[in-house]
Length: 58
Image (cartoon, rainbow, N blue to C red; front, side):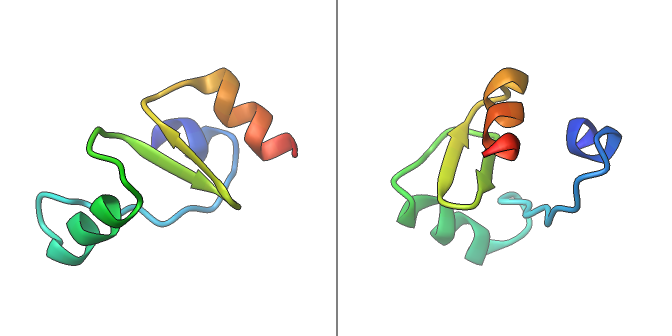
């Protein structure tokens, strides 16, 4: 994700189009929309820079 890269945040990108395990992980979280950003225990669905920044700060 470009936003996280610009902030210097390390991340692991999972592509549900290419990785069936990533699809199962997404479904296991009870989520079906993309993107999903997981920061600690927080699961953020959709691209929301303010929510991402708040989660990173906590």
